[in-house]
Amino acid sequence: MIEQILSALRLAGEHAEPFFWRTHGGAEVDLLLRLGPRVVPIEVKLGGPPRPGRGLVECMKDRSRSRREAVAWLGS
Image (cartoon, rainbow, N blue to C red; front, side):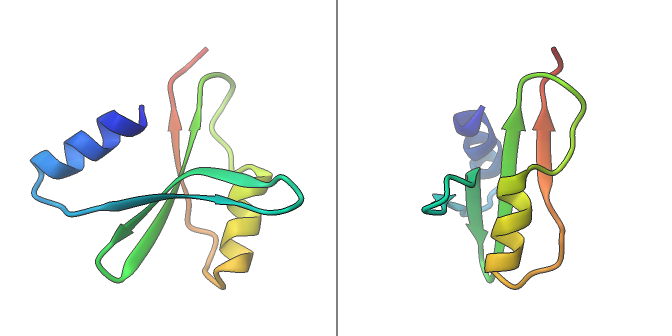
């Protein structure tokens, strides 16, 4: 899924720098994309309804950002 996201961005002419975020306590975000001055967190879920998880919430607090998150939901 992450490679598909990066490929789609390249095809759209966007330069995205991908990286990973994790705390010592185990909270994590699957993918963060640096798109120019913006950093966009993306959490990939394979089942259940899309909702912000602990990792997204802690990442936004850590980065002092509003709770804007992206969740890719692939269904169950």
